[in-house]
Length: 350
Ligand code: SF4
Ligand code: SF4
Image 1: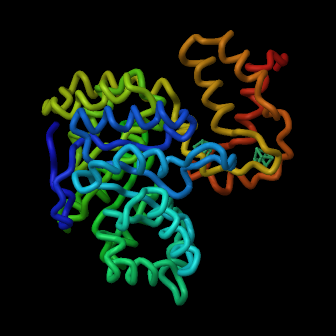
Image 2: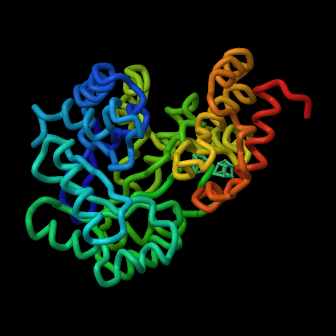
C-alpha cells in the first residue's frame, strides 16, 4: 500500500483510508473482521465519528467496532474521529466518550464534524465554544492534531484561513467536482499550506461503488492525502485496498468514462451521509433513497420493493415539516424525492 504524508502532521498514512459509516449496521464480529482485513491489507488510517451510531443502544457504535478491532495495533494506525457538538462542554463529553469507545487514551486527528454553515463555525470559535476544548485537549495530549470536516469547500477555505487546522475532510469525487469545485479551490490551498486532505465520499456516498476502482484512482489523482471510502464488507475492502497499490492516474478516456457514469446518476442523488436525520416522522430517509437507487439504477426492482415494504414507517408518512432539507448538505428536495420514491417502491400509480 502506498503512503502519503498527512500535511504538516508528519504522519505517513496509507493512500486508502477506512470510512467507518457502513460498519454501523454490521454485527460486531463481522464489522471487526472487516476492519482487521483492512489493516492486514495495509490500511493505516481509520475514520469514524461520535455520530456514527444507531439510536438502538444494543447496536455497537462504529467507534466501538474500530476500537476493539484495532486495540492490538493501536500505535501502528492513525485514528480520526469527530464531534458534532459546538460548545466546549458538549465537545468535552464527546471526546471522553470517543476515547472510551476507541479504547485509547488519545485520538490522532479529532475533527469538528460537518461544519457547513458560517454560524456553526462562529459558535465553535466563539466564547465557550468547541475550539476551547480542542486547544485544551491538545495540551493534555488527548488529541494529537486538529481537523475539520464539511461539504462546502468555499466555507472550509475561509475557516482554514481563520484558524490553523492541520487536517481537512471534504468530498472529492467526479460528481461533486462539478458542484463545489474543491479540486480547483480548496485542494491547491491545502497543498500550498501543507494541510492534510482526507477525501470524503470518494465513491459519491456509495453511488459509484460499482466503479470503485476508477473512482478511487480519480480521487488519488487529485491533491489529496488519503481517499476514505466507506467499507462494509470484505469484498469492498479488497477492491478498495488494491487501488492503494496502483499508482496510475486516470487516462483522459477513463476520466471521461467515469464522468459519463457519474452524470448518469444526475446531480441530485442522495450521498447516504445521514445528516438529514432524525426525521420528525421517523422515516429512515437514506434507506429509502438507497432502495430507490437499487430500483432505478441497478435493476433490482423486486428486491428493492420487498425491502421497502418492510420499512416502518414508509416515505408517505412524511409530515412535510422540511427540517431534513435544512440539514441536507446537498440541499436535496427530500420531500419531493420521497414522494417519487414511494410511488416507485410501493407501486403507487404516479
Ligand atoms: S419533511 Fe418529511 S422526511 Fe423531512 S423531516 Fe419532516 S417529516 Fe421527515
Ligand atoms: S438526503 Fe441529504 S442529508 Fe440525507 S442522507 Fe441523503 S444526502 Fe445525506
